[in-house]
Image 1 (spheres, rainbow, N blue to C red):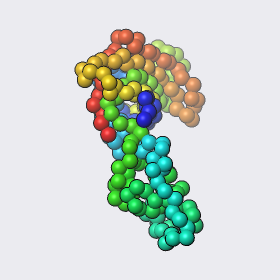
Image 2: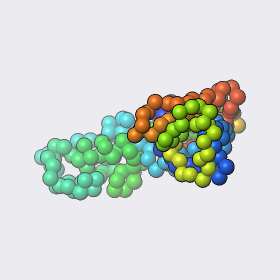
Image 3: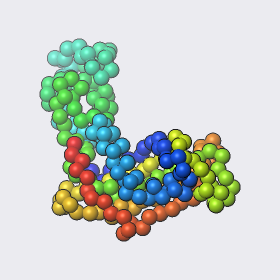
Image 4: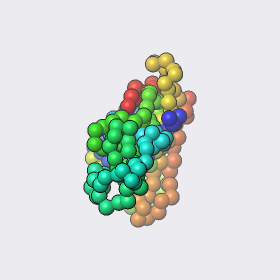
Length: 213
């Protein structure tokens, strides 16, 4: 099981009507943004938690001499060599390449939902959130850019989140959370960052979230 999880997401965010770039960056460095991202990433993790990397060790190759046609429900194709089939502990048979790819995204049997051990499980705390606000037609100077009015617009934000396991710690334990905020030009212009602001890791703390999968 992994001790840390790194996630990348592209989210849409609509700030208040009177918002500027400076005020949005301040939001990205606040507890409000931590809560916002928690509501976004927890459902994503629950929907796409992969099985542990050793899950296929629990599966057995199908003997070609006794194998029957396998209609793999992952690819819905029977045209494959029997020697390429594998049987899960629940008894269902799939193409080895298909079930390998499946278990990189899910932790259950495609047919009966037999549950493998999950790669991500337990209680996690947010360790770091790096948020990049993507802007078009960026002003040349820092002052003009920070004062730019962007209230009410639907903005694209690229977010990198690092989670750490907190299973062995008390339920109400607090953990330092580093919050970084930056402005990036849209890819059509250049990927170079224009402005980066960092929140001191000791000034922001969040409680571990009960993310149980």
